Image 1 (cartoon, rainbow, N blue to C red):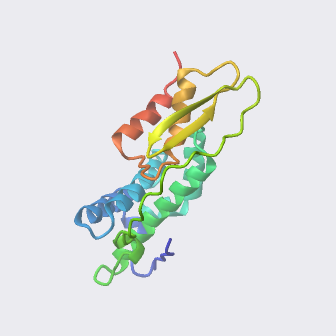
Image 2 (tube, rainbow, N blue to C red):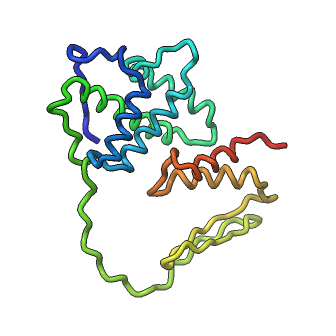
Length: 205
């Protein structure tokens, strides 16, 4: 990820809110000036952390940028089912969103998004699909932990083991949320994914 600096001599960060940064970035994604998925992911992370600001705290970009580590800590405390690596990833995305926005505000005429974020990587030539081979044997778990497998297509499958005594629906939902954070198209701002997290966080009856 490119390191992007800002110069406070040219922009007053206290006059710009995080909501303005979010709206600006999403608009740039819609216009194609930045990869739309990149815009959604960065803006979504910014909204997640800004959502834990107290009513008496400033909403300007400078305050949010300076206090990102603390906001990440609060978000992690409220979302215990997520790993620390997830919070670090979101923190990096939120920082990128704010710093790029402030860089644009400092010099709108000469601003350019980093090359890596302005266009998707060139597609590599697709190689012929190799003939199916017998998958290597998966080590058997210890006695009392039955394994299950779930096919996901293209001769691939997910193999997992269940704990002794089984699991309940809430635990399954939490596990599903964890798996979502490992996917290549994970987007916490997408409605169906956000609903899954909401279900997992819902207190048991």
